[in-house]
Structure formats: C-alpha cells, structure tokens
Length: 117
Image (tube, rainbow, N blue to C red; front, side, top):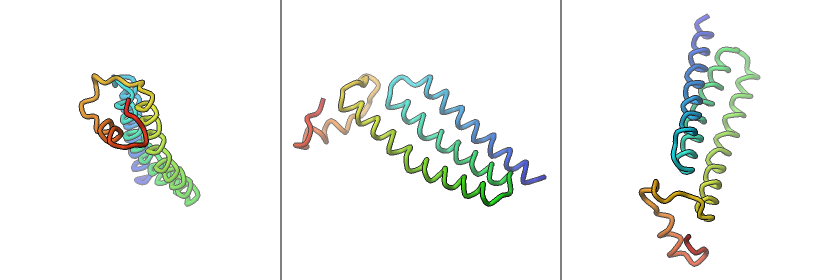
C-alpha cells in the first residue's frame, strides 16, 4: 500500500514537470529557450514517471524497461536539442534580440571552418 502511494506521488511529480515543459514551450519567446524548456524538465519528468512506474508495479521487467527508456532518452534528448540549436544558428533563423550572450559567433569567426552568420 505504501509503495503504491510512493509510486503515485512520483508519477504525479513527473507529470507536473512534463506539464511545466509544455507550458514553457508555449510561453518562451525564441527557439533556444524553447529547446531548454523542452529538454530539461521533460527529461526530469520522464525520470520521475519511470521510477514511479517501477516502484508501483513491483516487477523487475518494468524496472528494466524504465531503465532502458531513461538511457535512450538521456542519450538522445541532449544530442537532438544541440543539433536543432546548431542548425537554427547556422541558418540564421533565430531572433538576436533575445540572445544576451553569443559566444558561438566569436568561436566561429576565429575558426577557419565556417563563416559566422
């Protein structure tokens, strides 16, 4: 009975973080802040949901599935958000008024590989 309540509380916390991520996607002004809102709290919410699911179901198969989902998400979420951000930056489809610090322009202008936008 106690483990079911703990699992339900963990799932509820995960749902709250996922809801925060969804609200952040709607309210943030530009792509870079939306990427942050989509990747950070969403991943934390998924972690809470998977742990709550494993605690509540009391089955090692669900625990292994939860670990596999978390490992794949931890590997793919930062890489995909980095690639989307870099592609957006390189194509110049971003709003410079919301960007306070732009270190990538200095790095790219000093590099001989790519011209900075």
